[in-house]
Image (cartoon, helix red, strand yellow):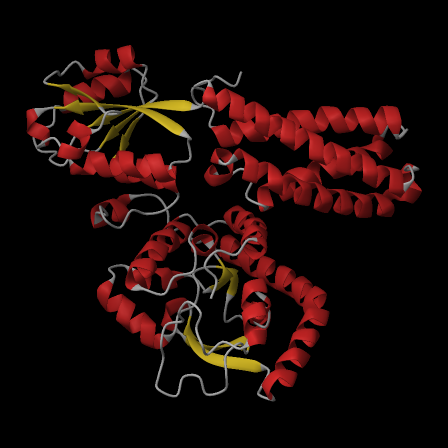
Length: 461
């Protein structure tokens, strides 16, 4: 089952988790805790598996980095298990009168043990399968030039599959062979043949990707033969976007962006997004009120300065609004104009360091969301001074303003905080992917993964 060529490691791990958690927990709940049968038992039985899978995802335990680092992944399991057990126990307490549920203390202990055991077993099993050569995808790449090298380099470092077996097809009309590919011990290049269908069959290709530097003169009939024989054929940009979760700006062709799917925003999508913004931000604002009050007292006591900090930012269609944040820098920290934040910035106060690391300084932006200035999910709002500078240097930068700016976003959960042109370019590749593939389910998944960024901040300033 887990050797199926189309099954990625992340999906296999989700399947393993689901099966093991379901079997282990249902056995414990029915045999040990005495949960009665019937429809009333569905709540107690499903609360723990649902909560555990949710927190495993939210803490990033199905991401490529977590799949490659088994020990670090297992180290995060106890937190996911504890949160899931607490959430499941809370849900069960609401159903107690209806379901006749067991004692919550016993339920919590059993849920915690199951939550620890099943995910750890699943990750050890995945580690064993991976080191036995499972979860490798066979990709045949048409071309062996610079574009093909860029493709395989990105797949090895960012691809959603842990490992790829790659075969390169070279033909004189496709351009020169990249020297890096010629010297790469893992790269196998087949040159001078046009029976690509036979090569694909012998190789066992799952997908064929056209990544030639020069396409004029390409033997299209050979590609068509592969396509009609059942081999999926992808254009470079489409395949890479799907595999790495961002738009590759280095090789971006505007014609592809023009004709590709995406950038579709129906009235229903916008209405659902706004409803999600209001519900989530209002709920979080209510829950965070004690933390906001405590932070306000600490800021006020530290230097007697104002608690809130207002700053001009750019949102949808280039509109400028005043963003609200808890003040983390000294008063009058930008008397000489706008500057990027820096590592160990001396302007940040002692209280401010804690607020930034914990992300508490961002909480007042929930008010901006309720006002309609921002969305919960979207590209981070930048200052007008920086927006003008970046738009002049980065093509397509203004396209990120098609949607409202967000408190969190696809770039924020995938790329560490950065304050340079190169960082802005990398984040733009994720922002364009989000804008192009916008959807309410995508927003929900980003919101869930924001928990990982809050608990394990990387590069926060």
